[in-house]
Image 1 (spheres, rainbow, N blue to C red):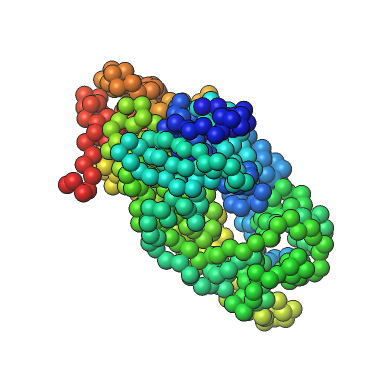
Image 2: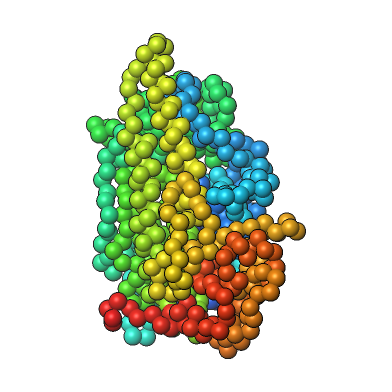
Length: 570
């Protein structure tokens, strides 16, 4: 299958025969295309938009997502995008941007992150730190890498019109958004990564679970989004620059993230119940922005729109037959904590290797049952965390006296500062949320009878208990332990005299699995993993650990879904 950029108009009119059809070319669909492309799986991606995002959208790439970008080889490209390397990444809270500063959490710049991560321990022992970068830049990078894989056919300006799950696979119809003849697509599987108004989820009739319509003074209800350019904004700011600016006052609550670190910003303001933002003009946009800044500042309006905060929704199913949903099609967040886009990326990471293993004949289709078994509980966990962060900031009442130049105003600002300082650390220092997601109840995780540490948002305790992220370490030669892992499966053989790994190696050869054995004698690593042998999955999750490889076949049988009995057959 040829790339979208090289496909002739005549070829586009022919029926397409592929292995995976992906509806949606946002972060989830593009990440999935990269996971499949690197494994040689033929894939067609269609998206009705003319290209990747113009608007900034999500603004934070969490550390675990950066580790996955590192695994794919382009974390350094992502880190070079967005803010300049020395631009502050602080989150700062103000009455208004030209008024009183109430609280600030200091975080490393992109340049500092590269060096600091190599000496950090405990909760932040990781290969990568978070990065403050707008989704529009991430999507462009993901697209460029997806297009480089020869098995990926990426078509923007095309929409999925209909599909059917038949005995022979997926039969679908796609068409250019500007018209033209329909194109028939035949695929083994369909993945709906087509956003909150997912055509795929709607056609399947899958309903949402969870809660929506949560009302708060801020981050609950309608929000006005403004993508703007304003070189003059910094001159109105009386305090040090930040990455995110949060306005807390009785007239207009808002937050704003720097997009380029120079003059472009993504601004989001709460809409009051009596207001009709559908009727707002650019003049209204300037008025709303001036309310938040506290003074008139010239701006160029690049785009404006409305979105809804107050969601904590998870689809009741992530799969029906040969059709899957992922990303915003499967879960909707209020974007506190930046968890929506990052959860979507991990959906793709989880599903990608499993689809490839089934299509390569390395695993039965029962392996695919584990996608929902693993990712749906994670979506419920993460939407719950996002909701708690939104409550923390959105239910705080900003009284008029907060802005008074009086003893009463000073007392009110001290109270606000104490609350907002605690909130900032709750929402923006979240190694537990980032690294602590687990698949403990998964049927394809080989439990060893140990229990993982408690799941806490702001504290992460590294553990090799099967079902979670492997503990990270920097090696004496400066390499990350994660960089030694294989493309797919990895066996860690730890300690000075580790057990024989031959049973795993022989089984991998028979089953056609890409397996790398990594032998590391350091006692510290043996102590960190608490076992001499550890099996790491392709998505860098601990599948098993133990003291002998004699049960390798049993381990792989479970990890690949051969022993998985779906609930409806039990």
